[in-house]
Length: 190
Image (cartoon, rainbow, N blue to C red; front, side):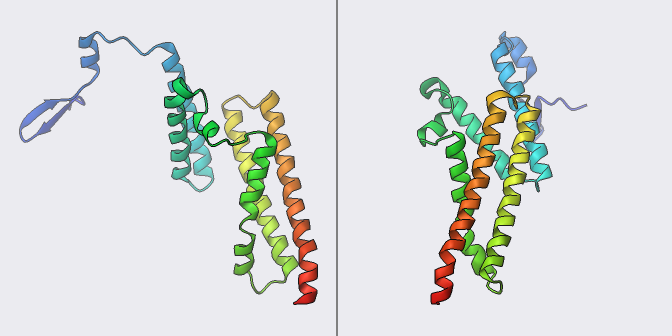
């Protein structure tokens, strides 16, 4: 059986640091706080992996989330929790989150319309809204699944998700109404 703490190269065996080195150095086991954080990170990664697999296996999304978590943990002693989000001045309230979701998703309308030139304006708008709403529904369902898996989907978290979802739906409806109202004069003048 091969010793996992050694590496054979060119006929020589080089010892790699391993469990034996920890025992020889007298190092103590990780404190409970570190162990708890490692367990939480493992749970987050496992939940994120299951969601990524069910949504087409998007490993870069997992990488992004993991990187932000690591950076936030590294910066926490000097800048407090969620340093990255706080530095960008991001509003994480239901209103702020819903506003970002609506503005980012509706920003694709002109490109979507250009790809569907053969359709009339109302049909393109309806198809776009159906597509966006489907993505919103999927995203909220996945987020709920992750938070439920972490057993934190209760109280304010749950009610804030519900409020954010309703604000997104209203924002999308307002966007569609605005497009319909703005398209009537343009159709008559063009």
